[in-house]
Length: 162
Length: 162
DNA sequence: GTAAATAAGGATATTCTTTATCCTTGATTG
DNA sequence: CAATCAAGGATAAAGAATATCCTTATTTAC
Ligand code: SF4
Ligand code: SF4
Image 1 (spheres, protein in one colour):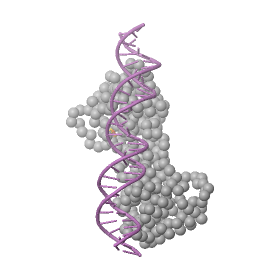
Image 2 (cartoon, rainbow over the protein chains, first blue to last red):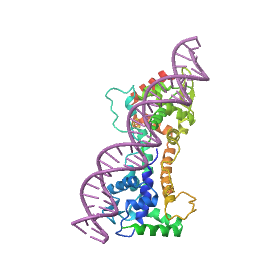
Image 3 (cartoon, rainbow over the protein chains, first blue to last red):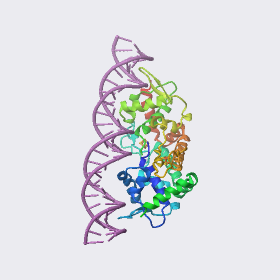
Image 4 (spheres, rainbow over the protein chains, first blue to last red):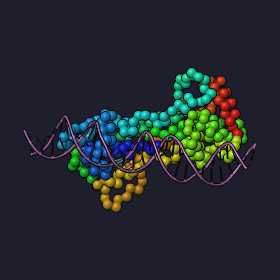
């Protein structure tokens, strides 16, 4: 059970978009080049973000993506779920229904304890991601990334932002 | 990102094995029949449990599987990891290394904040599973399952336990 | 107006994982 | 000695993730 690499891509792209000045857009092409990713496939991840309403888009030259809300209002969970989907990681195939001792017509009304426990763990994972804002990430990165790299990356992006 | 169905199978099998009297074994055949699962493939899941040291095995007629330790000492996490593996659900492909502004020879020493945050969420999931014992599951099931079904299932198993 | 650049998304191909089956081996029981 | 079992290798089928290509409609810059 491994998350898609698109999750990593989307998080990195959002971190870049968070540094974009108001009203500017950054294109798929620039984001792909900056991260060394296949443009067409990265585009699918960005489309997922767009469909989830996390980013705004603009067409034409100088078009691209920007965040739809402030980084402090955007959680990791939103980004992860936009790409990975909201389905729980444990799916119940109801194998208890095959129990040969089960009385005929007996109908399990609710999910059994196994599923509930697994879903609680799933929810703990989501709750953790819900607690981290994109602004938190930017805060950490701004401290950890060497100032000259931070500055040059910012300039690289600004040159290409429409 | 969905857990393998073998996780569900392994949890259910362990729940059954937890009710087995001391010194008795239950075969793959019986476990597969009880849950309506393909015997050969379920066998792979049980082999995973065996390799992880969670169950003991015995060969020959009247052989099969039994728990290697008391249900109170067996956590959900151990069972899940035996089948699903211990690898973290977020893998870092180090895309920051492709940053065109990155100074030549600049070497990121440690995983970046994105990975660390994702790994913390992963750990929250594991911590939750670590906190649930197999005995907890049995306790809940014994309350929720209708007594006559509980009893007949127990007898069904005992008839086939070697 | 026109040409270039862009997001959106459909179609398809490739690769990897999961699921499943089959068969052999060696051990154990009765 | 015959039946039964776990272990595990080989292989196949199905499904998901990854990747590429192409078309369409829109917007910008000139
Ligand atoms: S986890 Fe419980 S409810 Fe879900 S399939 Fe298994 S037995 Fe059924
Ligand atoms: S999460 Fe951070 S460390 Fe991991 S690949 Fe992405 S940039 Fe690199």
